[in-house]
Image (cartoon, rainbow, N blue to C red; front, side, top):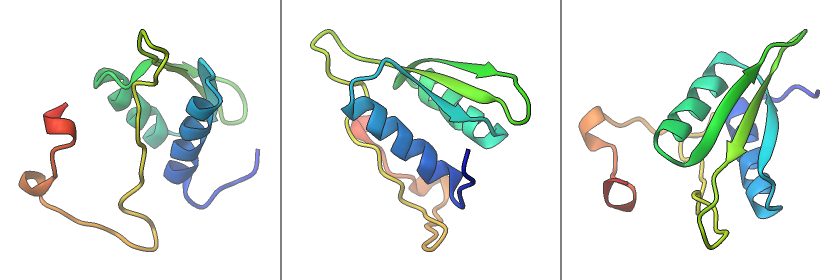
Length: 102
């Protein structure tokens, strides 16, 4: 695996590409941060499930994507707002509601 400077953007791009290709699951190199992001997306209902596969040297995250009855993805848009080159800081009360709090 090639190393990446921005693992979060890499994760989001892999998920976007898998959705566009209608894959049911994808594998991502494991890091504690990415495992937690995937678990949050799964608990909020955007992903079906997340499995951590322990392997040497790094391990992988197996992400099962969620699709609706009409074969549309549960994730419609996936955008990285705060980037390493442009950080966006907001207080907990200033976080915007997405899709009316969904």
